[in-house]
Amino acid sequence: MSLKQLYQRFRNWQRQPLSYKEISSELRCCCNCGQEYAGAFCPRCGQKAKAGRITWTTARNGLLDLFGLGSRSLPYSVWQLLWRPGYFISDYINGMWQVSFPPVKMLVIVALLVFFMGQLLFPEYWGAVIEDQPATVTSTGVAYYVDSAIGWLSAHPEWGILFIFSILILPTWFVFRHAPRNPLHTLPQGFFIQVFITIQYFVWSFILSLALVWTGMNAQQVWAVSVCFLPLMVIVDYKQLFGYGWMGTLWRLAAIVVIIALSLLLIAVFSVSLDQPDGYLVEHHYRPIFIIMTFAAGFGTLLSLTDAINRRSWRERGVWRSMLLPLLFFMVMVICLIVLEIQRPGEFIQALLK
Image 1: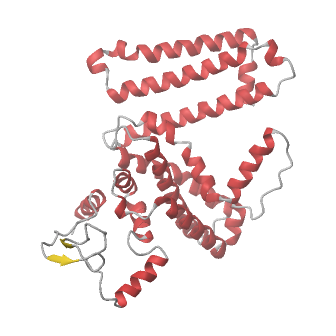
Image 2 (image 1 turned 180 degrees about the vertical axis):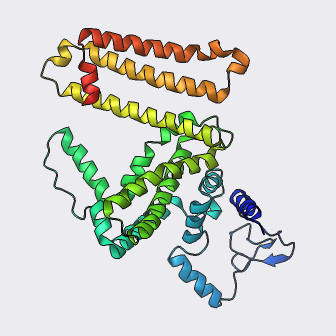
Image 3 (image 1 turned 180 degrees about the horizontal axis):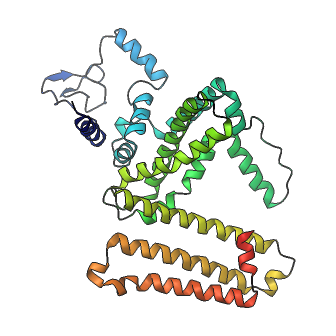
């Protein structure tokens, strides 16, 4: 078999890995409720048709279920998530729950296994990445709650990394809501998308750590490689999940990165404004309004432009009419920036640099 045929076989498996047997027409009597039926499960109580006399297979399956290795097994779900991640996630959010281990439970188990095995196999690396004893919180006021939350997330890395990936939920919903595959996906579906991607990142980071640490790399080099691997993983996931080509996926992910960057900049500028002397916001009460308008117009420019490209609205409305809304948002953003700069020259730029 040639390499091309092997690759085509792999691609077919990615798109359709499961095959189900035909339902038997043989009538059975349920051992649990006495219902007579045809098929693999009782329609009244849901018990399997194979249930009956206890054998060694029953004992083995009971032990496997104890460790999450039985029906909807954890290793099978992780394997699918590594080699057909976007298709596997698409299957789950479209209702094929039976083929997947429960995702939130899988996140906790995989995180515990990864960090336990990481500490056991190469403690120097994982000790450099994860602090065993989080620092004591000494700040006061609002900063105390922020530092406490950061400390808790550091002590619970599975939820900390999930929180980081959860930042992608809303911009993903905005940018990919007209995708060829899984259009108009909901925000709860977006949550489970990021849960699966978090699990995938844990597993791949552990595999990369094994490979790189045994080649002699230090902790900083391993961490840098795993962080650089993250964008490639997300690109492959989104391409398979939403059905765009490579370039279509890349520029939409770039739009998401810009949205997140604008959000962080808005928070940074506001924090700088709050650090100003007393009376500053009273004297310059208009500035928070113009700052919000500036970033809102930036969001509007990006999202309206993305929406116009996704819908290909220029085919019906023409280029100028399609670009009218993005241009309007852009002009509002420019005007707000000019007003901020005229009132206090250089302050907005200094806030961004800080």
